Structure formats: structure tokens, C-alpha cells
Length: 117
Length: 111
Image (cartoon, rainbow over all chains, first blue to last red; front, side, top):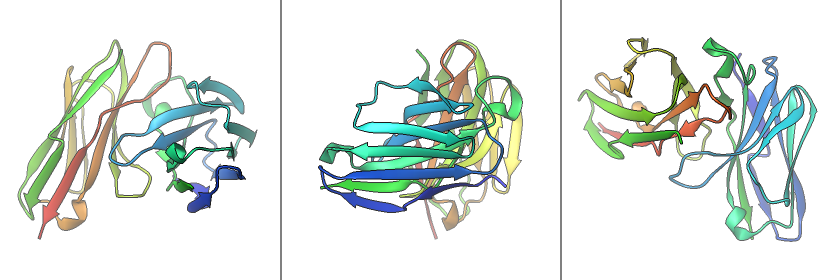
């Protein structure tokens, strides 16, 4: 099973709202990722968690706050977003961050389409 | 800095017309090169990982190959359901554990 699930599928929020995106995987992967993708562009890395600890923060504005409650779950808390934050938010997971062969293969979820009004 | 360039940006094919997509890369120490397929509004779907020059992998009508400078994704006798954007990404051995993505090859297969 190589499934990563994300909820909700779609989210519309105002600039003063607080909302959360959720991601779950049951593949026993220890690395999880958040990406942002704009139309006709490749995914842009936002955050990486390894063994439930934040490993990489790509200088993402503080209005995006990641959380990894356990090895299977990853959340992205949203607050005071701007219209330019509207995008497809993708979660991914891999076995880990180091090593070779299949260790680094990232499996993506279906994404959450976020619209900020 | 890792660089990944995909060509052509867009490709229209007749059903059954085989073609190849190119991904050229510049990286200091390739840990892996990954191909994904992405349908509009959906997450990328993992296709292949290639690790060393000369390696080839196949899945249905798709075949990926790797040299020291580039990878090709060959689409043999494509069908309309092969229409998608194909993303290439590389991972380097040093430092940062970040995938460097190309801009993608947008493929449309016409019945």
C-alpha cells in the first residue's frame, strides 16, 4: 500500500480564518513533507519532518505552522493567509531522508485545493 | 545548485504515435532520479526511480532510461489516458535532502 491521504480535498477560507490541513500515511514512513504547488508549476518544498521532528523549513511565512503529532500524521495549520497563498497543498512521505535505493522515494497524497478569499 | 530541465514543455501526440520526453540534470552526486505522472488538480503519482547510468525501468507503455547527464521517458503507442504532466526530479547525495523538480512535460494524446 503506497497511499497517502489528505483532508479536506477543497478548502475555502477568508484571510482572518484559522484552518488546518491533515495528512496521514500508514506505510511506516519516517519522513513526511509539505509542498505547495501553483498552477503549471512544479511542487515547492515547504517543510520536512524526520522522525516527528522538523528537519527543514524552507523559510515559510509563520502564517503556516506545521505539526507532526505522531509518525503517521502531519498537519498544516493556517492562519491569516493571503490570497496569493491559494494553491494545491501536497503532502508526501518517504521511508526516510538518508540511504539509497527505495529509501528516498516520495509518495504524494491527492492534495488539498486551498482558496483564500 | 541542482538543475533539472525538461523538454519539450508540451507535446501533442496522435494515439499510437510513440515519443520520448527528456530530463537533463546537473547535480553533484546523483542519489536518485524520479519520474512522476500528474493529472490536473491531483497529486503526483510515483512512476520510477533510477539510480545509476545504464539503468532502465518499464511500466506498461512507459520506459525510463538514465545516462550520466539525462533521463528519457519513452512512451510507446500512447493512449488518451496517458495524457498528463510528467515530472522529473533529482536528489543529490550532499546536504539538503531536497528534490529538485523540472517544470514538467505536458503530454496530450489525441484519439
